[in-house]
Length: 283
Image 1 (tube, one colour):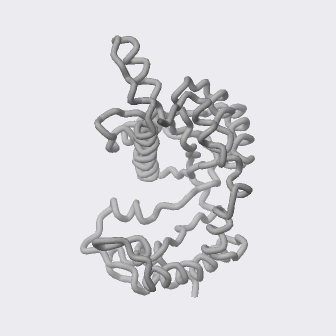
Image 2 (image 1 turned 135 degrees about the vertical axis):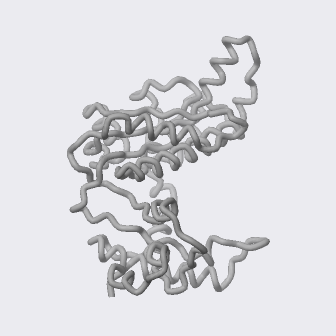
Image 3 (image 1 turned 135 degrees about the horizontal axis):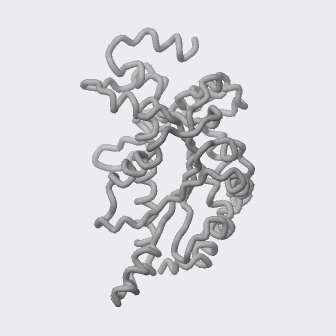
């Protein structure tokens, strides 16, 4: 039975969305349901877009939502570069492993850890900013960028748009920095393609690990419940891959292949070296 036909058995508000996310009969049931939960649980990656631009004001609205995310100590150590130029998108696609949806999307957002702004403000005001040399501040910028981007993703989806995160912007950090004219102490954490989803592409909700694997109460557990969640997802993920006409390798094989060693890291094994060359001391 396909997941779409399985969904018909759920009448309670939100129950179908929970089942679609987990593909488990014992998926949790919400105490109540609202439009925000509906939007969040329906998230999926879109790699195929209609050939049309974003509506006027959409980008600025998305960024306002991004700036509404939490930011550590209100430091706001992130920035974003919005790219619409076809040639620049194509060059960045080449740097990110040739992903076609980077070329096809009407808008590409590059989310940045940006410590340069505070350094420049400090210089202009004659104030020290020595803490920017430490790993903690780099991590703060990465976390801030991720929080902002996820707010942006939710906002753009609420406007009828779709997106896909591009981690491969970290494959060649120095080249990406050169393409974007980034100053020292600014790093492209990831990209995000944005556009009007092509409905014919049939993008689907990707199943996740059961909560037994990720929700720990009081302390961390590696136990049979977590093993069962992994084994169940492995089966459900094969179903998902079959539905999406993808190789049916399951979740375990796919993720272990991704972390098997340096050869699977697409150049990101030298990230620390790249960060130092980009002005991050990481003390």
